[in-house]
Image 1 (spheres, helix red, strand yellow):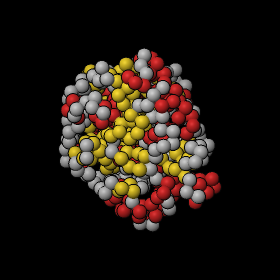
Image 2 (image 1 turned 90 degrees about the vertical axis):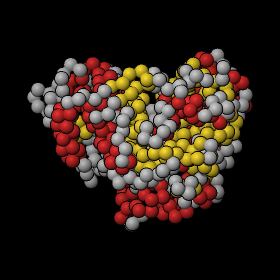
Image 3 (image 1 turned 45 degrees about the horizontal axis):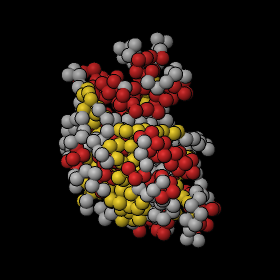
Image 4 (image 1 turned 60 degrees about the vertical axis):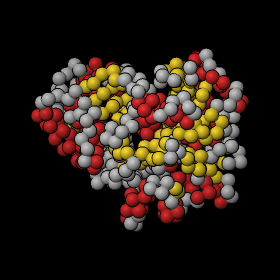
Length: 495
């Protein structure tokens, strides 16, 4: 039996999972790491802590599975996207904390670029919008504001990468500086049509090309791990940003298939095949993966605050002891009692793209209880995803016939039913919900002969439960109308 080691480097924790060649989980290890908030709207991580936690989980997962390096056919990597790391090529040491995808410090920089007329070029070449979410303006901020970073760039010893590049650098002992097409596509620096770093975009952000990693496909042997890390070398053979990896792990391999990952944020992706559809509704166009010489594309809608809304109820308001309690509490009331929570804590993502939006809680009365707030939080997550579904169907001209759900919050049955009702789309939850890591494992296994074709991968997908939308649309339509009113009140609040 073949085994794959998948590294799943997320926003709040590093995980490692060992899969066998049937796609079954053999061992899991996970470690959380610090979230650093230097000032409001800023979010950072310690790159050294990310690497140390990821290495520790990889070793722990192998130990739990009773395997060593010689038993592992390949290693796959999936990662939080858009997060920026800069380090010294000579020493391998980070030159600043990683700036996380949630960070909003470059909102004014993005506004200046838009006002200077750069938006059409960025939109056309990258498939993205000019928003602080993406890597490019974060990197430009570091080059402009951190003397050590600027000096390293001038002396030719600066390396930039997203988290996958940082992990590969460390896994190979500093021998390889590379990324894959999915991660490169989220930087605002990469032309997704020519599949290359773009000189015009680099110039607009004043980024020197010499600091960038080599861009490769999502499924190929990149290098081997340094032998001392795991007691022997392991081929690094699959890399994809977390949401594209989940799309692959959910076996959404045909045009029109869609998945939504419910984590800290929510991310809905639809496979559009070999066509890069340009969105009219502020969705993103990105490579889904590059595999065996061909690139498939996807439309994506990013919701910045998903499960984090429930975490706020737990940590900020103290009305929950654990996040899973939200389901039982919310089910004690038949509805939210007219309360609407728009969890725009770090702005609004697709299809609104308003970095100045802030959270709004409306409709409170003397009869409002913690249960109503819990239900409103779950509804707020589902409403945001429903907004994206509507935009995606409009852009693609294809009705979403089924949405495959994964991520931690997908275990919440009430949320999944609310999602089906509000979006008017069946929601299918698979038996194996570790789809992000599984996608990285599949990509690595395809490159090393564990699986022969994407069709072999798709054969492993199995449904655990399907949530059908209520046939009565009147209630959902009323909730959607109330939601749209609340969203308008959230927009532009922090200007």
